[in-house]
Image (cartoon, rainbow, N blue to C red; front, side, top):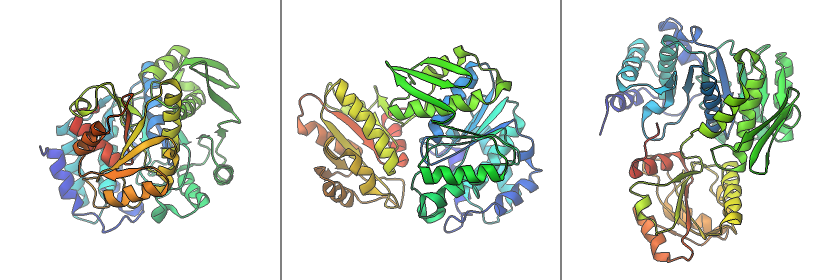
Length: 436
C-alpha cells in the first residue's frame, strides 16, 4: 500500500540527476533556503566507512540510550519503510511528520535538480533540529567528502569503520582513493576513531588526521576488543571492560562493538557507566545483519527444523564476515548450508561469492525485484559455478525456498538469504518482519 511518504519520494525522484553527481552545492543551497537547520543540531557523531557503519551506529545508540540519553539517528538505506532512516529521540519518525518535512524541503528546493538522498538529508536536518536530543548519530550515505551529510562544520567526533573496495565508479578504483574520500569527514581538532584497516588505508587516514590536528585513536593500537570465552573483553588506557557478547551475530560484531565503545570512552562528557555498556551489547538491534528469522510467512516455507538467516552483505568484505560467522556456526552445530542470493550487477559478484566456496552446499540465485541494476539469476548462478558452488536459479524467493525443500537435506539445512540490502528488504516485507 502506497503511503504519503512513498508518494512524495516518488515525486522527488523526478528531480534526480540522471546519475549520481557527488557535490555539496545542491544541499548547501537547499539548507540555506531552510535557514540552515544543520547549524541547530544536537552534538553530532559522524560515521563513515564501507562495512559496519550501521552496526556501529546501532551499538552507539543502544549504549547511549542505556545511559539514559536521548539519541537521534540518521541511517541508510531503509529496508522496508522510508521512515527507518530517521529516529527521533529513539522513535521512528511518524508518516505525518516525515511527509511534512519532505514537502517543506520540496517547496524550498523550487524544482531545482537534486538527488533524493540530498533532499532526504535536508529533511533529516529539519527534523533533528526541531527535536531536543543529547546526540545525533549521523551515518554517511556514500563516501564522505562530498556526501550530503558532510555539511556539519563541527561534529563532536568522527568515526571510520573498515574500508574496502566498493562504489568504485564514484569513489575511485583503489583503496587509497576510497580512503581519501572517507577521510573527507574529518574536521580540524575533532577526534577521530578508526577501526582496524589495511595498512595503506590507515596511512591515508592518519595523514589527513595529522593535517587537521585531529586527535586519533586506532583499533589495535589504542584499544582492543576480543572474544574470550563467549564474552567481549575490551581494553584501553582507561582499563578493562568484561561484557556480554554482542547480540548482533558474528565475530566482526565484536570489532564493531569495540569501535563504538572506544568512541564513547573518548567522550568523557557522556559519563557512560559499565552497566550501560553491558546493556548496549545485549540490546543493540540492526535488521538484516546476520539476522535469524524465527517466525513469519517465509519461515513457514522452509523445511521443518531448518534455520533461516538474512544478511544484506554485498561486497567481498561483507561476504567474508558472513562466511566466517557461518563457519563458526558450522563448528558448533553442523548443518548443510544453502545460499539464496540476489545481487546488483554493479557489485563484485565473484569476490563476494568466493568467500562461501567449500562452505555452501548449494546456491539458488534469485532476482532483486526493486532495482533496475539487478543481475539476472542465470548470470549469478553461472558466477557461483565459477567459484565451485553448485548453483541453479529461480524467479522468486518462494520458489527458491521450495527448491530447498526438494533438496531433502539431512540434517535440515541452514539457509542464508544474502547479496543485497534491497533483497533483504524484500525478504523482511514478504516475511512480515517490520524493523521497529
